[in-house]
Length: 258
Image 1 (cartoon, helix red, strand yellow):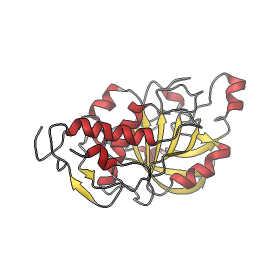
Image 2 (cartoon, one colour):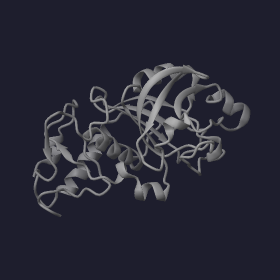
Image 3 (cartoon, one colour):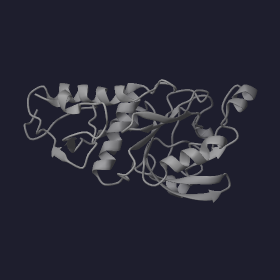
Image 4 (cartoon, one colour):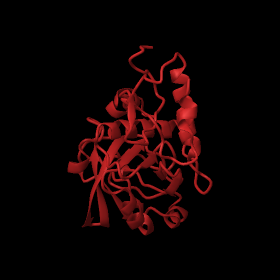
């Protein structure tokens, strides 16, 4: 491990203030272990009491990309929000989470559709191609809203080259749909599917879009080997460590002390 840098592998570091120090300035041979403990502290701060529990592995991947995007100036720093769609799970489960990182609150945990070209109950195939009707993996930055075929909808900017960077031209957006509901599941033994959009329940679309619009991070996750190996934001090393934390009830410097 170089003294001037900190190799953190797949583990994440949180950036919660404008005051940062360069990676590696915490010093010591146990940096990686302390960073791992640091990240577990962030994860354990999230209150999943009234929701399904997002897996640690998926959250770790989501958080790493979020931090890389944030450190690159690509996110709205006024909103510490991450939206995660875990497409490892069946569509009949509540596999979308909207998480407020600072408060540790799960703002939404609900159903979300994958593309009909990606599979039936499970999403198994993914594409960045027009007319594939498949979902696209990776990190997105939310954009502006508009009123379209499905009413209020939210544009998505795909940030992973080759995986989802065609999202805007494909019309991949967050929108509501009546086929994303427990009622639809009860009548069809499965959730309805979109043409590639992460569609959410009609009754929640306005509330969800209001929270996540305007430059927040959305991550569509899956244990796809090609994506995990080669996606830029997921494999980029974190540039900065936090000097202090704005999140209440977490003493991160206690975790990071030598």
